[in-house]
Image (cartoon, rainbow, N blue to C red; front, side):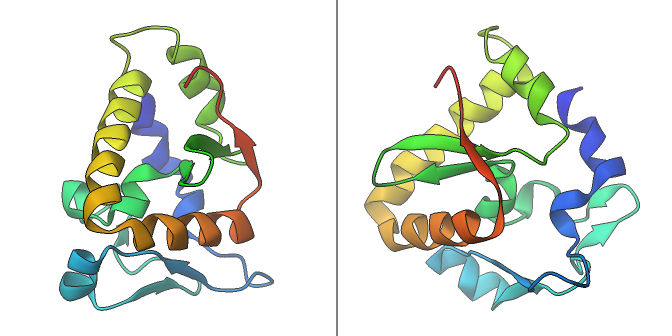
Length: 139
């Protein structure tokens, strides 16, 4: 499975001591559930097998390693995520896990444009400041 590497890597859920804390962007609904989340060293929801929140984790976490720019309406990805070479390769296959993930993200973004466009702007600003982003091929 494509995302199985995430449990062992956990790069996205850690902040190195020399880096600034990583604020987790939350939708207005997620703010009611989580309050606020910020990774200062290690995400408090991270276990040895990955995120304990599973499918209930914030959308910005589900979106990673992708980032969506609401101005250009294009996806980028974190070049430092070791998952991305396989993810990009899988985008050529309509029934792949990467394509399924991208479709789910596009659908959720479509909903967020109507209900919480501010979140999309804030999330992309955080991603752009924190990650090294490159345009996703085969969008």
